[in-house]
Image (cartoon, rainbow, N blue to C red; front, side):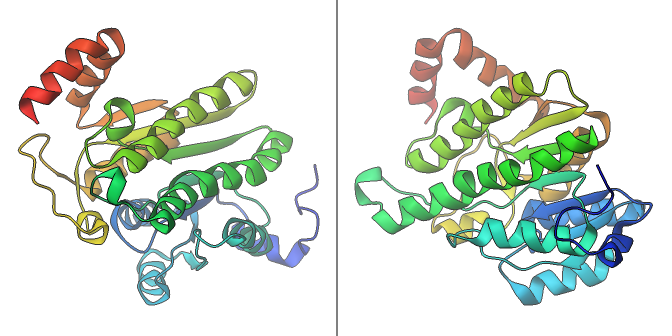
Length: 265
């Protein structure tokens, strides 16, 4: 495959010459921002940074030496615009970190229809389409990294977060299915599943975090897990690591897990 992707000028590829290109969504805050900061400090990646808040995104790009590509992934054509601009800018994308995500807290019967649609679009539909559009280029080049930011909620479910948990649970099956498809390639698919993270996420979803366990971890800690998946090819990482235990219990004995979950809230 030529170095220049179809429709991209040879001049554009010089932005990424000599360095792997990482596209990070949700980079204007939270886990995405922390991941950009961590990778930017290494000075070995060309960072393409996506987010909706153009002012914050520009500031993150300035600090990390990245390139801001603002786009609203909740818009119908947001993912197409982002991929087009990424390829025009760098000529290729070697790694995708799907860090954009939103939440909504409350009983499902009270959840507005537009909130359901927006969660499904940002947390799942846009991710699937980004991978669908970028994966053929990785396959042609024979290598690539895809890291999806999931959630513990996707492993075990959470009361009053049914749609959010559904989107993150779908990412688990999506990641596994991709691994089967790509087993004979050098493309690795990672899933990083944190518990509660100390970011503006809870304020934006409309309800504070109130559980005693798991205690919120820093976005920087999750970013280190994302980097581990990118660099080492780790497939499944829980943050903190002990969250893998309740996830396995849920898989082996779901009835027991649900009984315990009801008791502890």
